[in-house]
Image 1 (cartoon, helix red, strand yellow):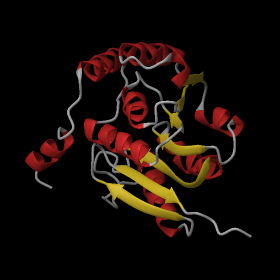
Image 2 (cartoon, one colour):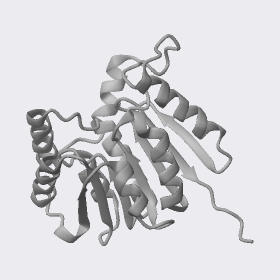
Image 3 (cartoon, one colour):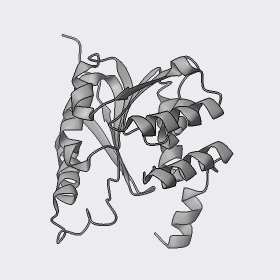
Image 4 (cartoon, rainbow, N blue to C red):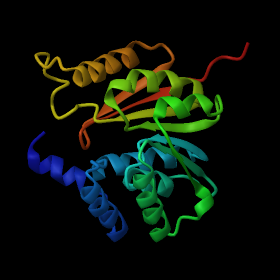
Length: 212
């Protein structure tokens, strides 16, 4: 894809001043939020699912969370997990500025793999993963348990700065993301797609299981 076309696609759905402020906060605390193309894709997925319950691993300053909340149904609740409580405080500022009611965003401070096992099986419409890349395989395992049939799991940074497509790149994070893609492709209960937005968004639908 030519750079001009990529930029055009990234900015196709414009961000407002609230998201711009959230990005400024992210710069101040050294957080890398999702790109606007990924944000728009997340809002689209949440909207298509008519999502009532979403899990996010990696709150940051609320950029991706706000995109998700804007796609969810009006009574939907986002459960967002981050190891940095200060980042979550900034995310709450973002949600408040956007007029999101406080009861629609449940922030949990902690490591993803400590928090996810405590969440309810089969309860969630969408699980978005943007935490430690080395833990992506473990996030997938938890997401498959948390998702209802027909729900979607999505992973940010699926192209990982153009490293995943280069077989010569063998660092731990790149290999983990590359292996994750292969696992999702080969999983009989998942319908996958890899979108070249932002730094890559890998998503998969959990198939409906036949009743027994």
